[in-house]
Amino acid sequence: MADSFFASAFSAISQAASRASFEQRFNVIQNGMIGQINKEIDKITDDGTERRLAEIQKKRDELVDYLIKAEDYRFGLETNKFRLWEVSLDATDAVSAAEADGDTSSFTADEAANLNEAKDFIVEKIRNLRFLYFPGEISDSTLTNLARQDANSLEALTAVAGTVDAEGTDPTTNDNRPLIDLMNTVATRAANLSESIDTLVGGVNQLIIDGQTEMYGLEADLAEISAVELARKTEEIEAVKAKYANLLNAISLSFEVNSTVGDMLVTGTTPAPDRTSILNLFV
Image (tube, rainbow, N blue to C red; front, top):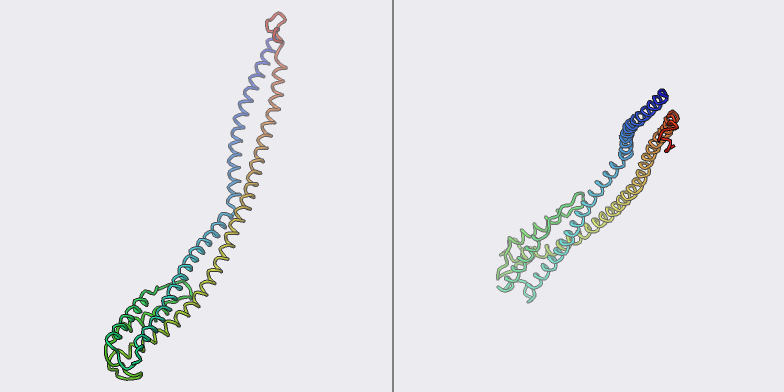
């Protein structure tokens, strides 16, 4: 009887020790698998997609900045175009007003004053032209500089009451003839510059259209890559988790089966209580 009780106790102790040992080993295995899962997830995540998305995003951001500058440049061109057209009209009107009385050989004091006032307004408009810069070959800096040179030349001349020399007179009596001739030149040149700028506006419009088309393509790529890659990565990560979860379940199930067999062995080695024992009440 003593041997039976000893075998039973030994089996119970061994089974308890085995279960505790398994719990410890299972915890170590589980932690190891979690580390492996994280490594595999990192590998799935860092597959070059993030770098590719970053490159596309950078290119898109640069293109957005370029388009903003192009829009500002176009606005500046259109502003200069209308201002130059106004200069052309103002210069033509000023000369016409100075010769309105039909006497082209002299200016009255009022005619000289009106011409000088018109000249000052024209100089101010020319100097209010926007100096624009845009990367690339499309630039109006030369056109603006030409107009500003005319402003400097106009400012150096002053109409006075008195003689207006005939065309081609050299030397001239006063600034009246040079000023009229220059006002006519400014009117023609400003009109030509305005038309030239209009051509530049057309070129910038095409750049903006091309840039917007490219940007829409980049945004479509970003959206497509993000959606497709997110779905793919989510599926792969879930597959990794499922694989290791199944493996842990298999290990746990194997132990439970072995543990059940051990419990049966412990039960089998436990002797029945004495017939006179109160334990018989629980059998």
